[in-house]
Amino acid sequence: MALAVTSSNAITGSFPSRSNPPYEPSKVLQLGNYQPLDRRDLSSTGVNVSRRRGEVRPLHAEPKKNNSMVPAAATIVAPEVGDTVEVEDYERLAKDLENASPLEIIDKALENFGNDIAIAFSGAEDVALIEYAHLTGRPYRVFSLDTGRLNPETYKFFDTVEKHYGIRIEYMFPDAVEVQALVSSKGLFSFYEDGHQECCRVRKVRPLRRALNGLRAWITGQRKDQSPGTRSEIPVVQVDPSFEGLDGGAGSLVKWNPVANVEGTDIWNFLRAMNVPVNTLHAQGYISIGCEPCTRPVLPGQHEREGRWWWENATAKECGLHKGNIKDENVNGTGNGAVHANGSAAEPDIFTTQSVVTLSRPGIENLVKMEERKEPWLVVLYAPWCRFCQAMEGSYVELAAQLEGSGVKVGKFRADGDQKSFAQQELQLGSFPTILFFPKHSSRPIKYPSEKRDVDSLMAFVNALR
Ligand code: SF4
Image 1 (cartoon, rainbow, N blue to C red):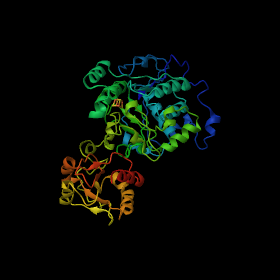
Image 2: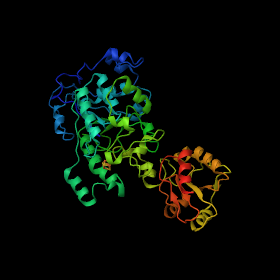
Image 3: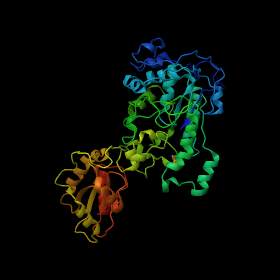
Image 4: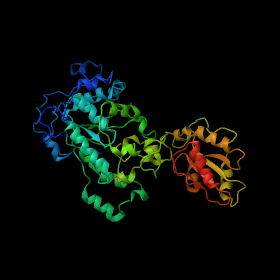
C-alpha cells in the first residue's frame, strides 16, 4: 500500500484531473440512484459534523509543518485548513454515517480534513476510493506503500491509475538499512518460517507510520466482509486505535473506512459501472492483493483473505496496517476472532449429531497413543463459540453422514478452556478449528492444511489418506 498525493507537478487546476473532465454527469446518471453530491447540501445531511474552522488556504499555498509523508507532499494541491478543530465525537459520527454512501462519506472526510487527509491505496480494488474521491470534485491525495516486493502487475497498475486520474501517487519506501539488516540476517523469505510480522513491520508498518505522522486523517478500503476474523466490526470512521497523526499523541489521527459496509460484489459493480481500471492480477484469480510472495489467487468459493499469508492462522491476517482490528484474545489465544479466548462462555455445543463421536480427554489421549487403530479417524478440535467452527458445522455434519459405514470414524474434541494447552502441545492446535486425520497404521495425526472446509475438500483429504 502507499500514500498517493495529487501533485501540482501534474495538476494545474484546483481539480484532480483525468484526461477528461473529472465530473461527468452523463456517466454518473447511468448509475441510477448514484448521484454526485451537491456541495450545497453537505451541511444538510443531518450529520452532526463539526467543521474545521479557519480560512481555507488557496491551492498551491505553502504547506505548514509537515514532516511526514513524503517531501513531494510539498506540492500538494489540496487546500490547507485552519488549525482550530472542534472536538468531534467520532463514535457518534460513525453511527450517523452508518447508512451514508461511500461517496458521501469520502466527501465529508475530504471536506473536513482538506490537505491533511490522504487515501491509502494498495493497488487492488480499493481504487474505488480514488474514483469516489475523484467524483467529489475535491482535491485529494493518495499514497501507497512500495514494499519492494509487489507484483509487476501492481506497479503497472499504479502507473495506469496515475495516468487515468492525472495524479501522482506518493510512494512510501521502507528504510534501506532496516531491510538490509533483515535480509542479511534472515534471508529473503523469512516470513515463511517465522511469520510475516517482522517483514511487514519493516516494509509496511514503519513506512505507513511515517506517512501518517504527516496527516490528521487517512482513508482506507477496509471492508467488514474482507476478514471475518478481524474486520467484522470496523466503523465507517473512528479515531485511529494504532497510529498517531500530525499533532502526535493518542487521538491525533482519524481513520475513515468509507466502504466498511459495502460488499465486495458491490465494489466490483461500481468499478465496472464507472469503467475504472483494475489490477490485471484480478483476472488471474487474485482478490486481495499484497506483496508477491505473500499473496496468491483463491479458488471460487474461497474467502479472499485465504490468499494472504495462507500458511498462518486466520486471526493474524493483518499486516499491521490495521492492527487495531485484532483483539487481544486473537493475538494471544487461539480463538479465530471470537471473544471467548478461554471458551468459558455458555455457548450451545455444535456438531451435535450421532454421526460425530464426542471424544473426552481420555478418549482422544487413547487415540493419540494407539499405534494400530481399528479404523482411521477424522477429528475436529473446536470451540463452540468460534465463528469459524460454527461456519463449518453444516459441512462437517454432512461429511460425517456421508462417511457413516465407510470405515472412517468422525469425531470432535472440544479443545478450548482447560484443554487448550494440552491440545496445543499434543494435538497441533494452532487455531480453531483444527482438523486432524488419524491414519489406521500410524500414531501421528495429520493436520488438515487448508482453510477450505466444504464437504468436497474435506472428503478429498480423507480419501487421500484413508
Ligand atoms: Fe514482507 Fe510479505 Fe509483509 Fe510484504 S506481505 S511486507 S513480503 S511479509
